[in-house]
Length: 187
Image (cartoon, rainbow, N blue to C red):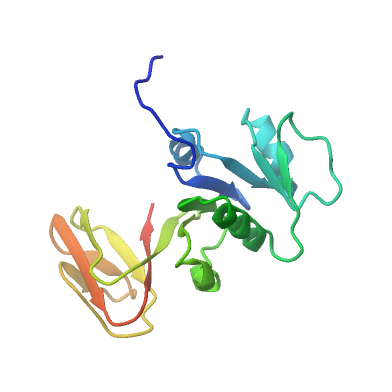
C-alpha cells in the first residue's frame, strides 16, 4: 500500500484513549488512520497492545514498567485527562481526540482556549464551538446541544426528545453570545 500523504509531526490530533468501553473498532481505525500520537490510560494498556497498536505514551502508570520500547510515561497526580492535556499543551499540540465512556466537556472548559478537544463515546462525538461555527450536514442528522444560554441557528429544529435535527441537506450555522457552545453529534 503506497501513500503520498505527508504528515508533519503534531499536525494531526493526538489520540488519548481513557476508556474504550463499547467504542466501535471501525471508528477507532479511522481515528488511527493518520498515525496520531497514541496516548492510553495504563488501565487499558494491555488491551491496546492486544489490538496490535503501538502506544506512544502511557498515563497514570502506577509503577508499571513493562511497556513497549520507546513508550513515554506521563505521571498523573490528579485526573489522568488533566495530565494528558497539560502534556499536549506543553508539547504544542493543537488538538486531541479523546475516547471515553462519557463526554464530560464542561469539565474541560479551562483547556478549550489552549487545545481543540473532541470527545468520542460509543454513541457520540462532542466538542465546543465558537459563535459563527458552520458545518454541512445531511437532512435528519441529530445534534445534542447543551443549552446554557440563548443561541440562534439555521437549518435546525428541536424535537420532543430535546434533540436538534437538521431540516435540509446543507449548512448549519450557530450564533451566540457566550464564549463557547457545547454540542454533540450521534455517530
